[in-house]
Length: 186
Image (cartoon, rainbow, N blue to C red):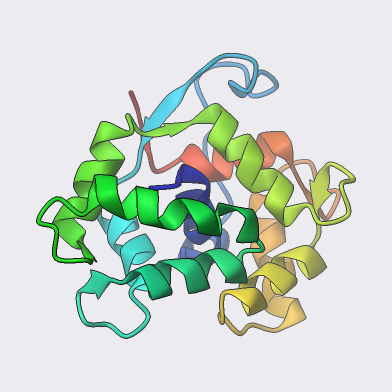
């Protein structure tokens, strides 16, 4: 299971998270958000279910290779399409041609969690113009690709909820904090 895909979905579908201002920071120095070190975080079962549900577009309780590929395409991750059959050979434990939620969770556990480098990769997917910051417009563009319709004003509210330095954008430190605040550090 691609961890970057998980991060993209977590960022996009956990909208409730963005509507409140973060109330506490990491106990460690936020300026050193772990991108230089290898930090690993474990998402909750609820977060993983939201991700699974995004892949399972026909809501039949399992992910087909076609659904997986469609999701990757929507995230502009077309380069990973060739890896889908290999991913299914590893993750589809019962060999029925689909990934069910239990297999999905097992793949996440075996993957060891979400690494700080995965978070950095997810950030770069959102930062379309490469300026080191994510704007509300970039959030809206990614949400639309994921078929999550929201207005620019809603996206601005999401950004404001994460934007701790008040510049109207999400930088890497803010993104790392937002992505990991509900995850358990492993």
